[in-house]
View 1: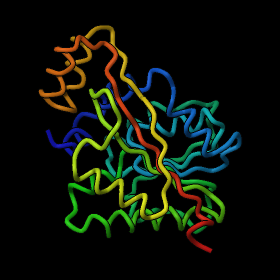
View 2 (view 1 turned 90 degrees about the vertical axis):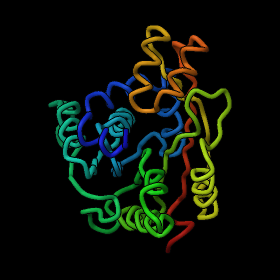
View 3 (view 1 turned 135 degrees about the horizontal axis):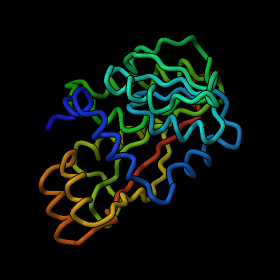
View 4 (view 1 turned 180 degrees about the vertical axis):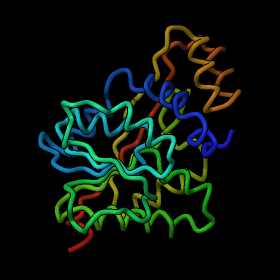
Length: 235
């Protein structure tokens, strides 16, 4: 199934899947390491159903969640609706390559599992990713952080780019001045069959077979976080 079809037609199933990821909370710790104890205003680019936005709120940030797919954005708004968060999160439907925000309004910007898709969907992917990164740089104030989060492998025992295309993209990010952190974000399910069924929806039959063969209720998952300080790249 094409990921674009998943995002447009099955946001609830997608959210159920990602909600089972990172059973140890390592992504939250990694974001705190980069953003610090007082993150300020953070733009979540390609927010999906609000997974990263929720973590940023937990860190005490004020969040602007940007998502181009209407179904994903609607679910994020529903899931994150809470009177206690009033004034701390705003939503906008927009593409990450044209953020509807003024220059320098944020302390940081995060794009979680977004630009890796452009590596497949766009022939001139470097140009398109650079355009999106330039938009993140534009809305972040001097000294702020630009963060990209991507996969380093599902149902594998060691971290690494899942294929040559993503390996090329990750190397390109690092050549652009981003520093990589990597850590486990394992999925947790009640049993191996539940794990295989849920992950097959997004990752396909080969991944499901690997999970069943290994009897994994806890499925290995690896994540990379690439960070760049704006002041090191732009005046």
